[in-house]
Length: 139
Figure 1 (cartoon, one colour):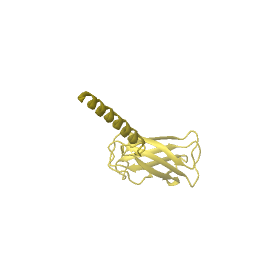
Figure 2 (figure 1 turned 120 degrees about the horizontal axis):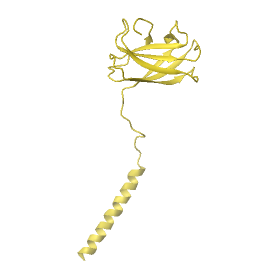
Figure 3 (figure 1 turned 180 degrees about the horizontal axis):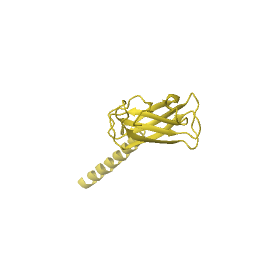
Figure 4 (figure 1 turned 60 degrees about the horizontal axis):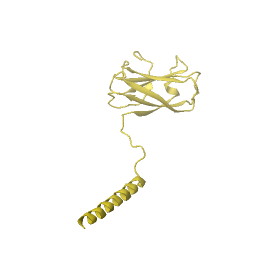
């Protein structure tokens, strides 16, 4: 008799567990939660095009660090073309402090109303300041 009651109890517990698992599987949870990595979305424009290299952006982004581990990717742009190349390098140009220079090579001369957004990450960055044209010594 005790064995029979215990069997019913186990069956009921299994049914309840299966029901709760199904309910949890249907509940709404954050879609693809992520851990912030410390990247920044930076807006660049035609003021960052180096006048001596008419098809190259050299934008200095102050970060407070010269760590060589940096990544840069192109985002939205009104001049996206096959052949655009981007990279970043740590620099400490005269009068600008420590940070990274984002360099974008365009296959042609960009328009005067250029918009080129990038995502940038530098290991050890303390902040991401306003980008400026980098055409001073040390760029």
